[in-house]
Image: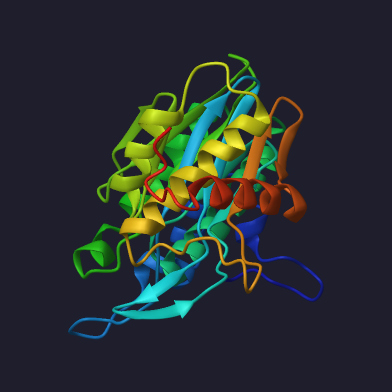
Length: 273
């Protein structure tokens, strides 16, 4: 970047432009964007993140993820974090190629922070969802080579006073989901569980139990989804988004919910009631 003197920022940082940090990088340092990397020919073995569940409840939205990352038939990581705060009022859960997904999350976090500083206001929840769609669309070339990143996004809509969920496809298509949604290799099994257990008006504790049960069901039938590990004390990551912002469930609360679910399934692993 030109125009830099002693103690001065480059001219690019002082010129007026878009409120999008991704667009800024694309113009002035495109090599820093994950989607601009040159990949080797042939398949690339990389850890993959798996199952995320998200659901609305009275007062907000919950997003939870298992902790397992796999690479083929190998467990690459047992305690990976897959649910992140995007900003103060939204969360993002990742499935797909783990390294690229985490980079996408970090870039998205900076994107939202940059917008807020430039515009002096929070972006609307739909605006955030659409901005994420644009970033996913930029990764299409890598997705065509097998390095797919497909997140789920959710947050608390301050205007509508409710939690909302947005899903994506690899081309960047953005779709609003209602009540609940799942992504990842165990999504089919988790979704079936949510259909049976979710109901309108859940309170926050009930929502936590529903999410833990859905992840338990996914792990029961999908080898890439990690179930609760009582021996290693590895529990799902659980985030809540409400009118006052994002918070993560503390370990004792998740541990208690896991123990309740495991106890209820003892001798009756199908979970019928």
